[in-house]
Image 1 (cartoon, rainbow, N blue to C red):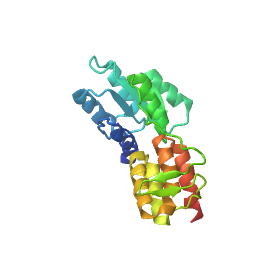
Image 2 (cartoon, rainbow, N blue to C red):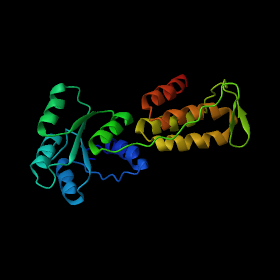
Image 3 (cartoon, rainbow, N blue to C red):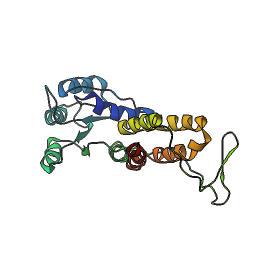
Image 4 (cartoon, one colour):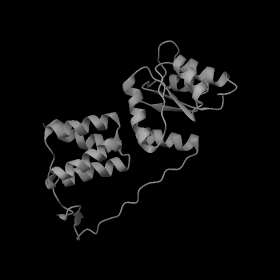
Length: 213
């Protein structure tokens, strides 16, 4: 992951590391090119505007290298200009990933260009009238009201969601269930969105409680 802003690099790291990917970071094009030559990664995700060497030059150097020319290169930028996207592809990039990065977009590009397959957890539907039994023997009605936790918990979830750290969201939600049985519907809704990589729904869900406080 090549980007001069650590927070942008951390988004990719937090999304891919929990999935089993080994992610290396570089703060500019020069550093990215050096690491690409020594590590020979399966793919490079690079920003466009960076010091020392920008993303366009990095892509061109990669395509001119006999050893690295066939490497998958994804350009990621917040630019809304079609010219930047087109220029990225003209320089030799395989795909364009807009910022802020959505997990579904990132995983879709990796699936396509690295030819990998995702294995999804099988979710079991609960019969509408049966209710649901949570660990510890607590019965949860299918129509149970969603009770939000205190503001400090909301802020923790909001920060994790904005960073794209879905694994941590699930872990924090499981912890929330142990604090108070009333929070279980809230926590389960978060887990459902996170396990399905539905970041937009997660942001919308948590924001409504954040705005009320």
